[in-house]
Length: 312
Image (cartoon, rainbow, N blue to C red):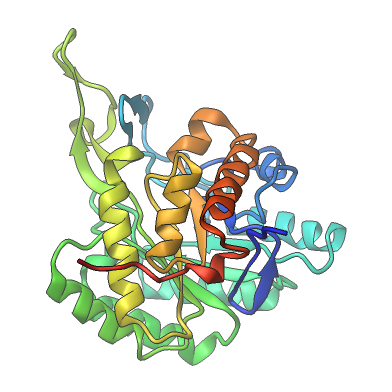
């Protein structure tokens, strides 16, 4: 019997796939659609202290090889997602969900975590350090000193399972430096990568950009980013303490893409652009494709090949 089950952050999942935060997670209807699919679980939209409308539209555009977006963190506020997930835990006892949160400074991060602590949420928190699409706000994940300070403060007060969503890194020394920081803390996992920030896509016919915010600059996702995502997953797999697991995100369209993420060291994967295009039915196809690859190669479960990438 071939199994795509996995274990992450101390919880067991019957599949290794879920949505990426930002896709099919804005409200209860979207989250329930993922809940009722073949996905193992869901992660919520990154919740802020107050609801946000986000950037002006159009702010998302599908391209030939992926997508570009500048959403600006539209969300219903952390209280909405806490209420929804807490109710869903009652309806599905024993199932683990992921709550994504993001503050705009350390004080807000700590206030968000206090709200989680005060609730009956029993899942995993994903702290987003990597949103590239809020005008005037830099990506926290590129400020290594700030990441260190945030994690120190966070783990002084929060002691439940917590992972961080990271931006892509492009230099070997940056993998080294970030891993050194991450290894200092009892993280459950890192999620790598968020979109590649501040790309530009042009409509040649109209000679214009295709999204309105930031004069067309936005995060790039989809097929474009898979090589960068795989590099980040494997670089952190090589460098992180083995009790810090990895969720691989970026460029997943097929079971082969999932196989490659796991081969690079991911224990679980998240699907973004392709989920936006196909909807939650995609998880059935992806599961079947991954199982077929595993059967062809003689693998019974993902631990048979996870992290076992060969070199020339």
